[in-house]
Image 1 (tube, helix red, strand yellow):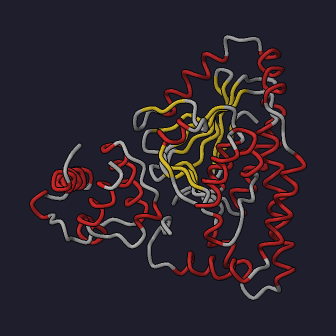
Image 2 (spheres, each protein chain N blue to C red):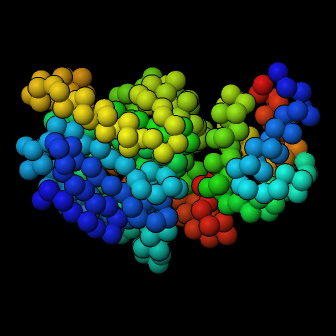
Image 3 (cartoon, one colour):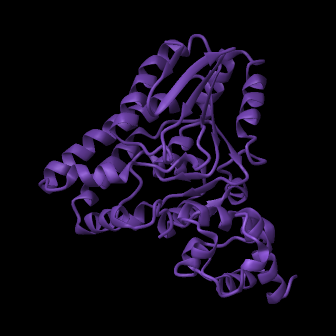
Length: 80
Length: 267
């Protein structure tokens, strides 16, 4: 099982690759809606990719109000 | 009519397979124009059934299969309207969409929904009328109606109850949470999960397999295993219309429509 740091790194890598943003431009406390320039539909896409990548189920209500990578990583870590 | 090209959807009969294609931006929302074309399809279906063995429903939009009812049109349509009058209009819309759904549900053809991306609300209800659901790995499903102070209105609850265990139905309905294709397959909603962009190919391969069987036998098997819950479907319309006059609905629709997000699919 990945530790929380590794989970965060994997999320950042996946987000950068999926939304074609240079990896070095992403930091853990970024607002991913703003940094990635995504709307809620694309956020759903990201959620689905993260669920597949980590093999977890993330009820979307647990992500309500979550907009930074670090908190997102915490929610995922809690399900691993 | 073996083929049709409309604003919201098109269909074509080819090699015994009807392909009904949804293609209205942003995500095949079902409003009055889509309903009119769905009714056109339902009218043509009786004739098409004599020439086909399978029906495939799919979307050409990357955003998804269908995001459900056109809530913006609904909100605009009922503005300034007396609540009982608005509820009557909603009932008429629901009666019409149920006729379409029931026509596809009860068709002797074997029907396949090939879904991708957002398959929410009325979109999930449309998929649920089909005999098989084949999902793209990135498909996402949801019954978000409770967030609007409503229940699903296009036949979702009775059809979900027909296909899945009651505990699962309660979870999906009462939490309004979205779930991915893997989960959908685990709970028995989806029969096949395929790689991104592969649903239509998989659906066509499945339809080709179905074509090897005697049509009358397939139709008899379907009729035996898939009863149409007409009474519950009617009851669902009644519950929806009762709820529609409540203040929570107006507030929920307003919040959705006035959201600054281009596509506010998350709560």
